[in-house]
Length: 210
Image 1 (tube, rainbow, N blue to C red):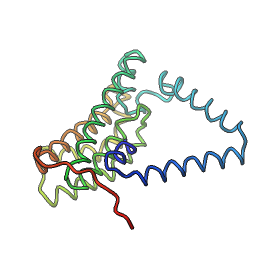
Image 2: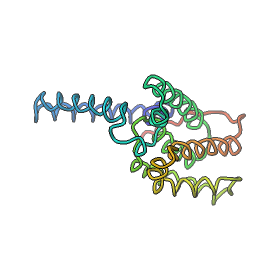
Image 3: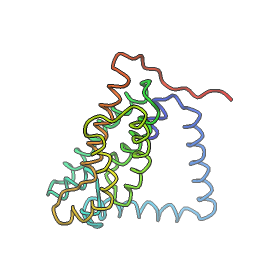
Image 4: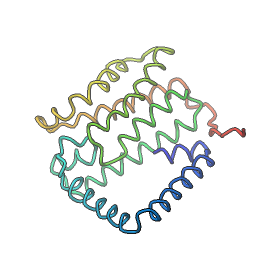
């Protein structure tokens, strides 16, 4: 979701800088540790994907994603990937609209944090710390412009869910993480639509020359 937002916003220098940094670090690790380190990394990635993610080696109740939700309820692996892919496309569309709109940066930043968590199939309950900046941005925007119905309730639930998501899923097989995060994302888009309006001219953000 982050590269998508950078591309939508026209932040090409940031993307180029990030790509160059990753490339330089990859070359540095290759020179320092040799090709065996990369082979071990790829082997670990395969194990994580098959055993931990697809077969639930970490425990379905610990993972808080749409993918793990489908698998926890008995869905096949292809169905879980399809559901996760559909969510990713919906999130990408929402972010593209929001980051090309004149909406407040607080809403854009909060949406990115929520979408980054929802988009990955491998999201554990402790990864929900990413919700903290989203809550901060949304609270700040709400204090400045007022809260719509159910927004305070959603924010309270979003703050509470990292504490209870694992225990609730273990007992009830209901993953509160993706449910509450997804509802909050939808409420955020509703707020953005009301504040910015669908008739506003969309202008991609550009980096200013220094």
